[in-house]
Length: 291
Image 1 (spheres, one colour):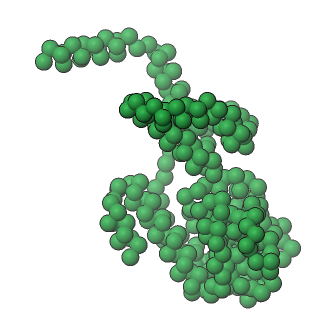
Image 2: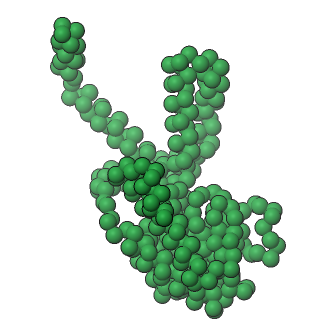
Image 3: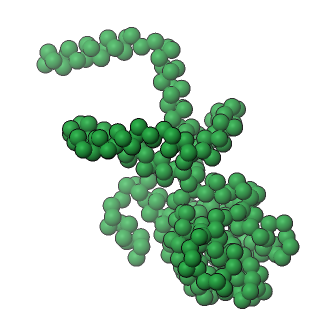
C-alpha cells in the first residue's frame, strides 16, 4: 500500500512541475506527427512508412530481448537509413516543404466524416461506369479508369485535373470523347466519385505484355503493379473491355460480368475496411461479408 502511495506522490510531484511551455511543446509535437502521418498516408509512400515503423519495432524488440544478431543487422541498416529515406521520400519531402505554412494549419481537415451510404453510392457509381464502358466499347472509344482501393494515389492525382463529382455514364463518356482535353489520360475513382481526370499512369516494364496491346493497357498494368488499384481499360482498336489487377490483365468483359467483378472486389473490400476500423469484427464476420 505504501508503494502505491509513494508512486502516486511521485506522479503528483511530476505533474506539479509541468509548465505551460511543456504543454504547448507536447501539443506542437503531436500536431507535427499528425500532419506528417496525414501527408504521407495519402500517397503511395505511406506503405513504405509502415515498413519503416515495422523495422523500428523490430529493433526495439531485439534490444529488449538481447537478440544480438538481429540487433546488429538492424543497426547497420539504420546507420545508412537516413540517406535511403531522403532518396525514397524525395518527392514527398519536396512537396511537404513547399506546402509548409497556412495550408498545413487548415484545421478543418481534422474533422472526420463517416458516410453511411458509401456502399450504396459505390454500387451506383460502378453501375454508371459499367454503362459508360459498354457505350465506349460499342463506339470503340479508348478509356482508362482507375478505382482507388487501400493504396492512396495522391501522386497520380496531382498529374491530372481534380473534378470530385458524382460518377455518371454521361460524365465519363464526355471525358473520354475523342479530342476532348482529358481523353488521353486516366480517370481516378475515389470512394465512388470521379475524383480526377487526365492523370498520367506509370507504364509497366513487363516484357510479357502482348505486343498487340497499346499504351493504355501497359499503363493499366503498370498502375496495378504499383498499387492495389483496379484499372478498367477499353480498347480503341477493337472495343474489348479489360481489367488490370496485381499486374495481370483480364480481358473480354461484357457489361454484366464487369459489374459483378468490380462489385465483388470494391464493395466487399469497403465493407471489410469499415468493419475492421469501426467495429473490430473477427475474421469469421469478414468471411460472411464475402459470401
